[in-house]
Length: 284
Image (cartoon, helix red, strand yellow):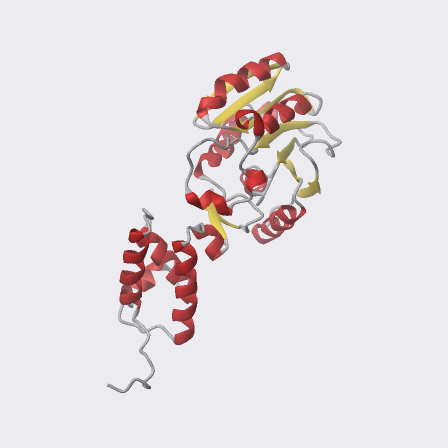
């Protein structure tokens, strides 16, 4: 055998098989799906293409890029950071290590907003209603709210300028007309809002969590006081920034809900609804 002969690159099916075995060995439960996503992204094809062209050989460059992405995933880098986007409410949002990766749990906020408005048309009078997304990150909540309920006027707030840049990119790409401003919670927001939505850091550092979260911005995940520090601050600030009978929609772990409701009641809110990870509070 001539050692100087160039090594053949694998065909699609072989690369997927080998990658899946390695990912399974690393303890990644979504091994097969992750392998398909990474290779499809590398080839700029959909996953259906991979199965229909399993015998097609990768080019040297394709194999190099796919292998590099595989190594990142073996190191437990989240798949969303590897491919640069994550789906939320049926749309793709750009994400970077400066932004929290959108979670399916947060989609309940959009569902609740839509239901609240559809059940009470008076929530949308002739003057547009104001919605502010606090700690917007990638912008997924505020941008989706605007696209699903175009009558809303939406403002995105974040203390991370990098995150705001990502959110503005997503808004432009998805065709959502929103405002974006730098702000520590509501400190730089001069208006009164009818809806305040927020997925703030609420994870306590002592909780068990997946290794992938080590790659996400820690300031977007963790908070002091059992994970409630920023939520408490927002509840205190929001009272002066909500319109009469306005609503505050918060995401938090269900084990925190009872304490949040108690704090909210002492600040002049009533509990409107709790669904999954989301608490809806209404200003009395």
